Amino acid sequence: MSETNPSSVLEGSGQIREPGVFGKLMDIKVGVISLPVYLVLSFIVLMAAKTGNLPNDLIGGFAVIMVLGLILSELGMKLPILKNIGGPAILALMVPSFLVYWQVLPSGVLDSVTTLMKKANFLYLYISILVCGSMLGMHRQTLVNGLARIFIPMIIGTVVAIATGLLVGVALGYSVHHTIFYIIVPIICGGVGEGILPLSIAYSGILGPEAGTFVAQMIPAAVIGNIVAIIAAGLLKRIGDRNPAYSGDGVLVKSSENLANMPSAADKPIDFSIMGAGLLMACSFFIVGTVLAHFIGIPGPIIMILAAASAKALKLIPEKLETGAFQLYKFIAGNLTWPLMVGLGMLYVPLKDVAAIISLPYVLTCIAIVVSMIISGFYVGMKINMYPVEAAIVTGCRGGLGGTGDVAILSAANRMSLMPFAQISTRIGGAATVIGATILLQMWH
Image (cartoon, rainbow, N blue to C red; front, side, top):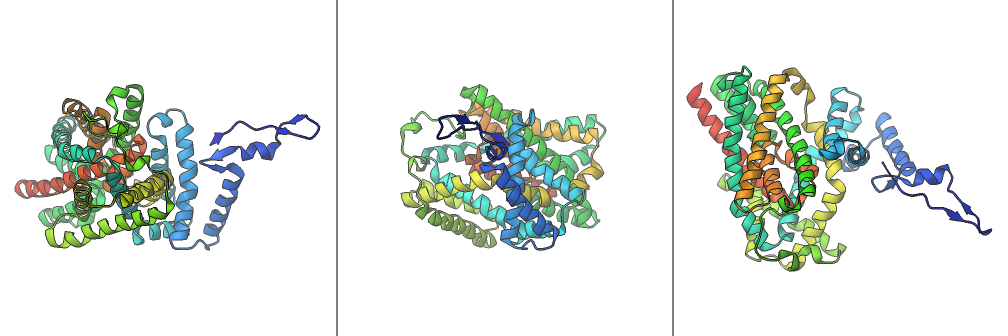
């Protein structure tokens, strides 16, 4: 919680009176809300949940994740050590996961958050707004340069991660087969929905046991890898802050052009009337990806990214609509990132599965895989005229839990503008991993 300097009150007598206890409490902020107001709002949500009156819809879901997201992100920004390694992302993701694991949340809370996150698909709406808004709002040349080069650190990072994972895993007592298929592949396969679930079905078809057995074996590696990537992103942010030459402050590729002096959506005054058009743009691109995915076999999010990128590169979108999409992205990223991560922590980080498999050699192997991938991205980025910090962060998204991981990693680094590149790294890299692992297992079993 942040505290402002208490303002003194000047009375008619000319004497200066310090504010009372309530005035001092009002100066303490949770996010942008005064502490007493926050406590009242939290009490309303808590009592509704305790008495079974919390709406099982978007209203109830948003109320829960906003209340928790505000306090956890504020603590993450203030607590020693945590504030330097992506504390807001870590607390917003992990504390709700522990609350679910310890079964301390009323059932109505989980029902409302499930409705928001899964039935209403808030995660994909968030990602659609960030992808389209950040992509349409960035300089056209920056987008083209980034898309042209992002595959180099992604591919090299994957090769380095596999080699390092094998060396460490085998050295710590795991077989080559187990290290590849149950530790390395789950970390770099692109998350649960797009990676682990298809893999579990493939493993089941090849090896025999039901798919659920393989899900439980693979999820722990993905969760641990995601946590390591979040912490690394927070550290990379600090490296960029201390060494500005390594950081593009959210820009991926260095450019000989003076982009800072070129007009962009970021220079336009806020116009609320065009944000609705930006929302329609994001939804439309997502629907395009969903529809075309049925015909061409490419995951919908990838089609969405390619469609938005093509529209930007070919200047098909009117400038006013690009500005609307960008301003909506800034609003959503600035207000709903931490609450979203609360929902992700409740529903997508199963600590029960992690606790059943976790051991020191297992954790060390996961750490080695993700760290080696990020380090390789840093140095490869430096060699190919990319900003090393941004290249390392995007490469590290290969070790995240799909879209969930991308949000957590980029928020820890305060670089949500990299979402289009992170999605490409995660989705395309993950799809290639699923296909490659299935073929390899079929040949090996």
